[in-house]
Image 1 (cartoon, helix red, strand yellow):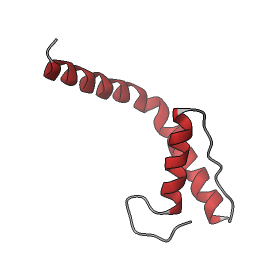
Image 2 (tube, one colour; image 1 turned 90 degrees about the vertical axis):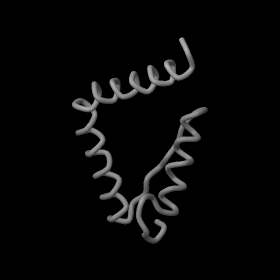
Image 3 (cartoon, one colour; image 1 turned 180 degrees about the horizontal axis):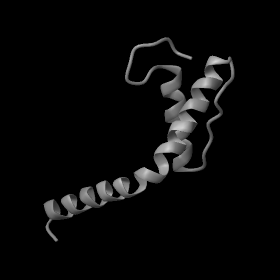
Length: 76
């Protein structure tokens, strides 16, 4: 398979997987986001942790919360 074909195939497979999962994960994601917002609004906190690559994800998420993500706002 040529590189461009391989790239197209991988992108399309990723898109199909996301579309397949969307109906079952949209509600839990929305609920998790609501829980995070409510915790912060009530003076609570969000604990982030992980192992290996997930630790990097947790660090990235907590960094976004300290700064801002997609819109201007004070750090939390």
